[in-house]
Image (cartoon, rainbow, N blue to C red; front, side):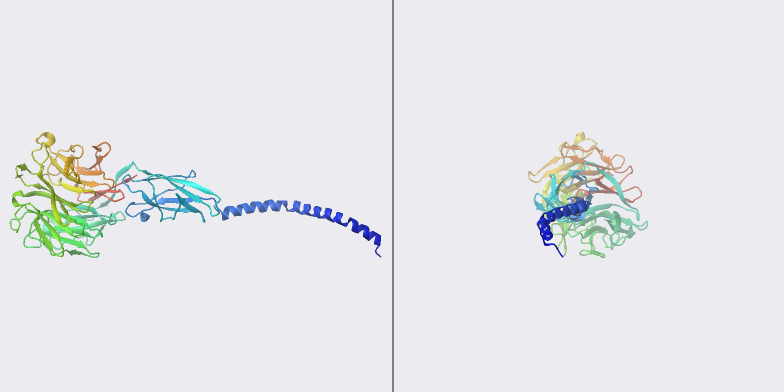
Length: 527
């Protein structure tokens, strides 16, 4: 039997005992669970680090594929500095620094520049000043700043990188860069035997730094190539055109044009587009992608007089005519032509003998909107008695603003004496005046001297010429000091058929023919 009074006493103490027991029980559990709780807290923190990582850039760079027409190769940071200071050096001549960056981050991170969300391989920023990249984690609780600074490489150098010896260049070589992708092309003549009747034109293009034939490596010209006068140019779609003097007609040396149609070389119009014997033959594409030719006629049997300066244009058929005012009395000794960066075509010539009291004077013409205009008419340098007629010194190029550069040589520096030096002149299209660029290039001219000019994207003028030992030598005009740079010989070997050009990204290419008749190529880039 249960004692009623005992039961009541137990009931009276029950609440007190229950409270004490409850606290003891809770305290015991707390003590027992403390290590587990601490471990659980630590585990939770680690899980947070995985789920919500600290923000970080993992890779960064500028890629040519994302910056077409601006970069010729990739510029990538090898490791991201923990300081957040990222520096990338680009070629000196890259002017447009609105570039697209390619980057990676931890999963879930956000990236912004100037408050604008960034997408790798898509977003463009102006890197003419440092750009701050703000990388945030997915929870928006942590941020890290990376400052990207683009500098200009000052250690640009010329280095040999692609040569070609599969066949021997015989009588000249021309190099041009494609306006679509800056691919270098060269055209030259080969002779398959000791007989000139076997001479053919060959075209190569640079593919992965290897010269690769465009068409038949043994030559493609329909007739035998006369002499060493031919030209190369490439239209805005990347189609190469070649002009050469053809011997297949009854009158030798008639000008013929062929273009690459993607699988073979096809004649534009007819073989022998006029009856001139074409010397100093050049080709350039006009603003409508139509070929323009200039030549000096060497034949007495042509409809044109001997030494006439003849231009030919194409629009479904060829049309050949004297340039305006170029009567036989103003006969031409030599000529040169090029397409300018402004898409106009420019031609220069040296008159034969005395014309109007001027001894071997210089004239320059411009072809635009289907019209020829004269921008220089039969003049020589003040203090000179004549313009030199040394081969392959005469040249003309133009900048995008219509500034024209003319290379020639004269004896003004020796007061009409026997010393002729190379002179580069500049034509200001706004003031319509000519001036000498720096000083004359101190190189005594002889009949074998060759000169070529090219403009880098920032307007820096480069000149390639043979030094006194015939070494291929390059200088540029320093716009800060207003002087020519110290000459750099690309090779310690004699060179002919000099060529130089620049990509839109500022990479330079120079080519020449070495004493063995093989093509040597040099590239101008950061170390």
